[in-house]
Image (tube, rainbow, N blue to C red):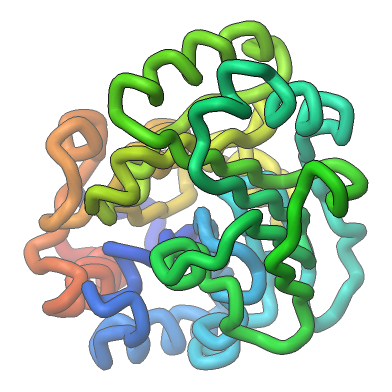
Length: 290
């Protein structure tokens, strides 16, 4: 893959986990950080597009020194953290649908835990270390996190609803019930984020039906007046699939899943732990064939 028209200032979209972040989920490889910072200095626009909530994204946003729009929950929350010149866009699941789902008899009988999130608060029915770590529930101070019964305490729409099945076969029963809500929700599993554990296999994550990273890529391209064919994007998992397909230069990580590599325009030469984004983007922006 080689960039056409090197003089153009690009919109560069980056996923976090498994892409910009190393496998510890806490650090950015020095090469990747260096190249992304230089891209901003050279007039390109770098945007983080992640499944993570705002609270678990801000420190990387600050570390990279970017001031662009940020996208969380795979597109359910688009905002301008610093300048606040962009009116926040939130694409939620309605309060009524949230309650209809969690009160469905089959769901209610077969779940062990429930997480309900909006863009700035989260309720977990029972304290659970996996949920706290996976969803970064206590990463920053400006979001509210409660251990509380959502049946009694939750109010308002949700950007993310996650339910944990008691057993694998019960998960299928729950998903069958969720078909009743197919006009308003999108059903995803823990596999989509690439962190596969016993707990994640029992996890069913629900978002607004229209939300995906490809949809976000188009919004960001329009906002920054970029032809979508000139946009560069990096990702590693199935939640990056629509974004990689939508942009002109979609790059899958070497450590990414095969399904994503099959539709990508390019594959990094190195993994996320080896600075794959930095090495590939630097060569791409320099006009090299990669």
